[in-house]
Length: 140
Image (cartoon, rainbow, N blue to C red; front, side, top):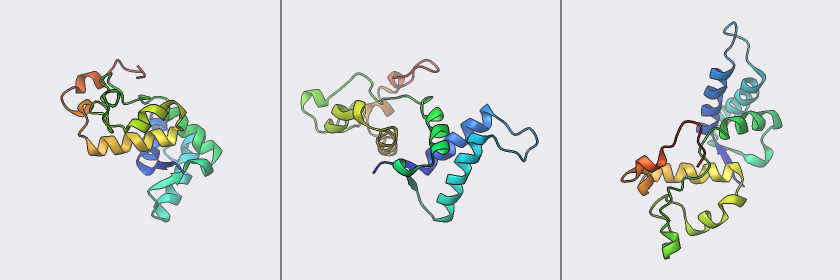
């Protein structure tokens, strides 16, 4: 089961803090409250990921709004899997991940993004990093 990593939940919380700041420093917007409840449980139980399929509906909806602001694909239009590589030198995804990308859930896509970002050895993170940066709001 794909999981939503705690760092993504933190990013979504920070996104919503910017979108709907607390008017009095105490009250939370509904989106923030939903995400904060999941985050608190993850911290309490020392979990790094929350199962995407059992994520509370309101928290998932708030997370998905943040997710939709992120680039969809790590592709930089240099695909070595089409040349027979098991792992793309351009984006770092496996051949199967490249082939199944459009079928993957948001949580599964974020797992791939996390892995390739932590590895950081794909060309999108070094020699062709300029290709990975698009205009603000542009989805790749």
